[in-house]
Length: 370
Image (cartoon, rainbow, N blue to C red):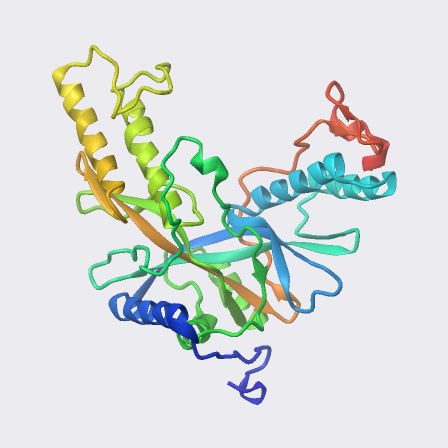
């Protein structure tokens, strides 16, 4: 598409033919997925924070992962980001004062955009969706989705894993493969419809198609979904950066959390006690239940397994996709109809402009934060 072909408020999409065997394999994977999964299920909005420097052009970088369920959660994460920057990294009292002033606003106001030390920060809104096959099955990871060379199942592996959106740069001008470009153009008109949505949500969605006419597709993320019987699929975890991270989360849920939730293992039992290593004294029925959880978790570790069943519930590793609507001034922020679950508040102890943390004083008492 040339610049002359772009509609009002839209930018041309730069298409680059895949080069090399890896890119060709990813494009072939995408084509196979498009053939198998011809429908989309929209889950709803997710929120994060993006930043733009003065010389960044139209690029923004993600500083708070776009995984939060409401705008205030993203604002709170930005609050913490700036507070810890002031505490641990500020080079001068002047720099710390500027950071603390931004923190003070975030503690008191519903702030969706602010500029700190020459950088714009914006709460951004993404639409989360997944591809469905003809039977309503949610897409699972593709063969070319990133995976670690050596899967790490150790208890501390999650803390060492890469976070969702870590280092992600949002660049609407970046070249796309043919299938990526086709998906991006096709989703420009995506909007809510139907009687299940309040009128305000439908109106905001239609308005966003006009005010933010382009879209940017974010990298795939992964989560656990689960279904009992013929019921609907429901999310069983937050988003993870890789399919292996989601599998490891499911392994923990099956062997550690589910047995405790069902009363098979006491919550106050030693942390090492799980379905694979149960303590002595279980009834025969409880031991059988624990064994079923352990066997399902073991199947996850036998290669790239993306679906297991235990006690009538099917657990699947799903491939989640997200898009950001994009306008002349960058990514879309929260809509008026987006609801926050809580109000702004002080999240950390008072920090003065010298970098001293006052654990015994409320945050709002510092004149530097006025």
